[in-house]
Image 1: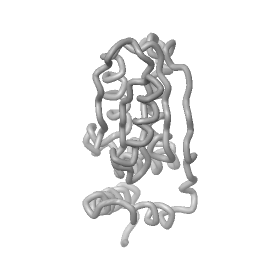
Image 2: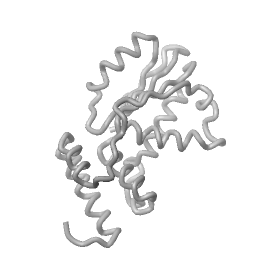
Image 3: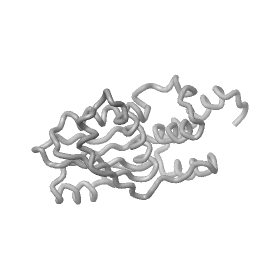
Image 4: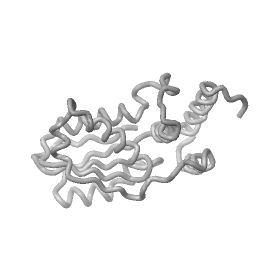
Length: 178
């Protein structure tokens, strides 16, 4: 998915809205309207279902190497990199990040990882004034039951994509059967 990019009108403050699993831009509209009424520029980013799922699995397994065959534009790191590019192209006075549930939290984690590198974007770190965790992330430790419950709120295309990733994951781990 990606998100919407808004050209900065001035050096106003910026809020990054990072959506949840299954979120649509229209779901973020009340937050866009709220922040715009408070004088913020707004960027929306909504990680795809596959990005959230792969982030949850690789976080739990502490490795992303098993997903090396995933196209780069489908990774949370890629979304975070493009988000930073979008933010850097604006001239905002400071930045607030508002994340929703797992989708937003995983995007924040990828952003935080990039921002922690001293050689990269130090000017953005100085402008980062706060983060709001809204509807905090859930724990996927109960396994696929929780994930399949969450996937029931997504499109059939996302579910088919996740089924394909699940099969590839099982193959990589040497697990047979469904």
